[in-house]
Length: 495
Image (tube, rainbow, N blue to C red; front, side):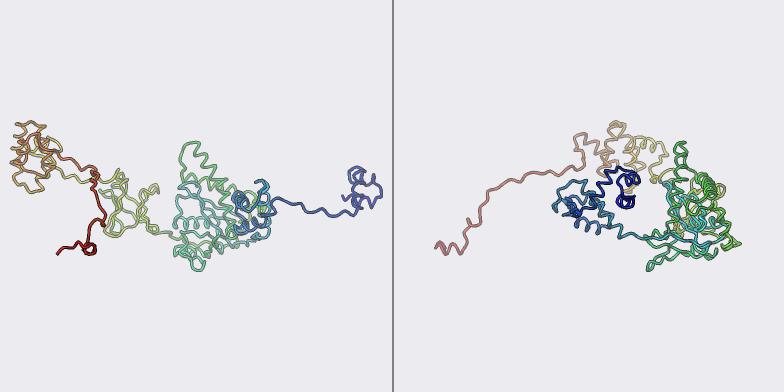
């Protein structure tokens, strides 16, 4: 309560002090100070007043994002000598003033029943994604896990969400997903033909939010964050503790149970139960179509041949060798060929769609890359077996002799084996190595090498360049050499 007005109403110091909860001395001091005509105190001078305009300009140019740490060196150069802590106060004050004049001024959304279904994707873990959908009016939530964000997966989940809702809203609002976006012209998103086909079949209008516009998708962004914190994080934590990988089927079972739980709980924003609101909203939704739309290309069955491949579109696609003789389903999804086991639904292979007459082979399906073709010697006769038993040098000599067209090679093997018996096996192998190095592939050449003995030079690969300093020679300047003009001027010219 105001002390001065209380004193003027009561008229005594002690009475005003009792009403205001203070002492009579304080009341007297306040009343006497108010009766005196004291000048207003002068504004306090701050040590950062000289750089206040500089900080305000930098904060405005950076849209309130620049930090005091980066502004302090600039202020020091401009003459600021105060402490860093006092300078942080100035920057915080400037940012608060900037935000007061530059706030977005958003208004809360007012949703109509049966108007919007909002969808979005979120990444729960590497290779595990979360699809979220929410009816804007009733806040009824739909969450599922998937291993990819392809168009076929997104369209199938939209169809599943509409089936779980039991009706079709007027519009489906999505972020600018690459799987649903065919292009952008003048900031208008063009949906893909597959998405338009799904919308036409179910009877809703595709809608996309603008770029960098949180007002149009804040409701589903909140759902993605809430489902990640309340569903995905506990699920992944339990899997990490138990040491078991997260199975998509088990994750979707947990997601269904989570949706049942949260849709039966009072929503904090609308203060109502989403399931109860959905019952009221369902009367304004359009009915589901009687026939379910085929999403993606229809699958076909192919049998795996002995090459561990299937043929589709006159092209070959490999599968793991354990499936030889079995049948797999072929699903084409936006340029990708997915091979699925019909019994389990597991994707066993995935290829890029290739042209007819070509083959797409994955090395993992054959336990490693293709080995190099080996067309080396395969001895049959006794002489051939004895010669090839000498090792790689003998085989290289044999291949080289065949390459130069030595038609007497078969009879010369006996001669070479005889040279080995005379000179020794190790000496013959060394001679064969030298013959291969110098490309001499006849028995007479090997005999000449053996006759030369061990004194022949051995070939070595080239080494580093030999760098030698050039010898220095005495030089003279050009003035030391007389020319014709200088000889005539000196009178030393001869006839």
